[in-house]
Length: 202
Ligand SMILES: [Zn+2]
Ligand SMILES: [Zn+2]
Image (tube, rainbow, N blue to C red; front, side):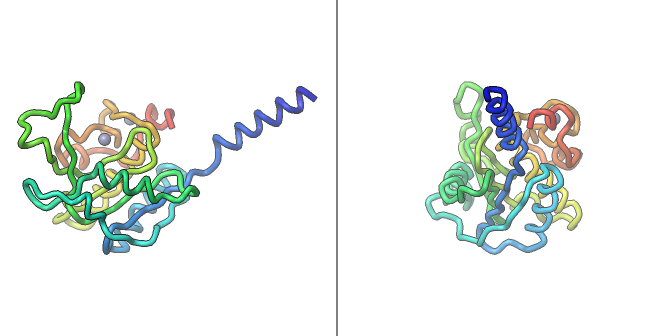
């Protein structure tokens, strides 16, 4: 009997760890169906997940800020996404065409200097590590040809969900989890995939 119980619990653990994860895409405002399709496609293939597009909603007004220009605070959006995420969804990724920002800090927690530059810093995306929610903005990656726009969108989406799944920034050259170090060029030269080392961790 003991042996049977042990077998059952091992099976239960196994089935739990191999359960297909579900990602929900939350469109904030009107998002082109091509954008949603590109995200769905890359998230499905990169993480072997099921991906669903949720009903669109408006950006929460409490996330709005206008220090240097009109933006939405990404940190507030992560909280908003997490709050409304259905239990059936493991990770939720918000997508907006508006500019999003965060406060860039050093490892000791202080705002990076010059403070006027980094207290409200425009970004491509942000994700909790580990966590349930992340957000991507198309604001800083648009105005390029369609194929380049699509690859940027897909890489940033894979990167932010990677953070949700617990991945840190990676030093492997061209790994999609590399820190963009404030440049879109890092994104443009990166692969679409996680490097084997990152892949092994999820
Ligand atoms: Zn990152
Ligand atoms: Zn890596």
